[in-house]
Length: 144
Image (cartoon, rainbow, N blue to C red; front, side, top):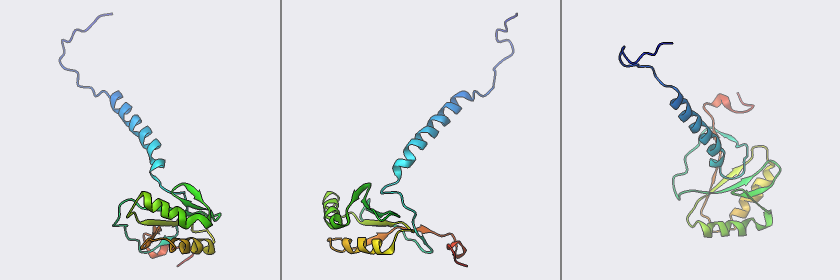
C-alpha cells in the first residue's frame, strides 16, 4: 500500500455528516417542543369562513369544552359550578388577559352555552371564540 502525501492539491468534497447531525438535532427539538406549544385542552374546533386574529391583551386564558362536556381552564379540569370562580382566579393571576373559548365542534350546544353563561358572571369584557378558518366556501362540512 502506498500513501499519497498531498501531491495533487486541495480536496473539495463536501462533508455531509455535520449537516445531517444538525438537521437531526433540530428535528428532535421540534418534535419535542411542538406538542408543548398547544395551550388548553385539545378539541376539534368548528369551521368558520371568516376568522380574525386576537389583537389585544397579550396571551389569552384558554377555556375549553371537550366533546364529552368537560370544562377546562388551560389544562386543568374545572366543574361547571366552580367555573366563574376559577376564571376570576385566573384573571387575578393574569390581569387584562382576554379569554379564548375553545368549544369542540361535536360537543352538546347546551354545555357550551352554560359555559359561556358562567363566563358572563365574571368581570370579563368579552370572550373570543376559537375556530378553524376555511380556505373557501366549498370546504364547509356538509355544505355545497
